Length: 214
Image (cartoon, rainbow, N blue to C red; front, top):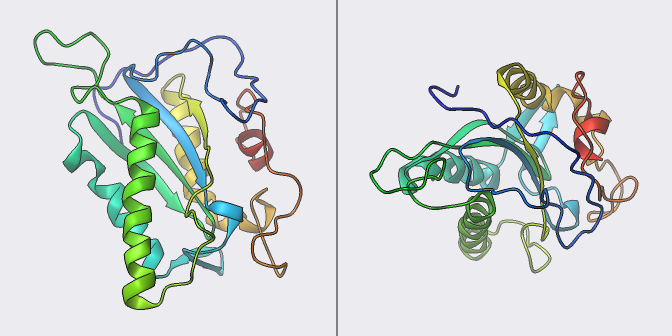
């Protein structure tokens, strides 16, 4: 869990339906704090394994994503990869930007100078490269030109109680798979149940799938 990190407290709504930019307008995403992110595969293709008896069973591609996530702090000082879950066609995780400690570094900015979008972009780039190599070397399932969908969902964690509830939501996600808005059952790969979420809502105390993914 997170230690000695100031959690960002934000007021106001993040009600931004425009797909080209669903980040909170005017917010500095290099600020120290914790951010809950969800990233989906392109066309919600199930590439990382299967849910069996309420637990995620990772395939080789899923294991690769897990390794890349866990190595983020080793590559980028000041960036921590906290609670994390890999689902068949998406991932949930908490990215933590630590307060700067170096002399001359702006207060609240990671020592690397990275923003949350920078971290997500690098995660996507690294996993896409590894997945492409896996397709060539190990005959992993092909993906439709892109491994990840272009955008992602994020939520700025407001305080410690909210952080704990989000962690619980992430931990329980595999057991809730068939209730997930991103669940794809026996339908044709690439098709999903219902339209893709386009709006970030204010958090619900229950942290249901509806609250986070729509």
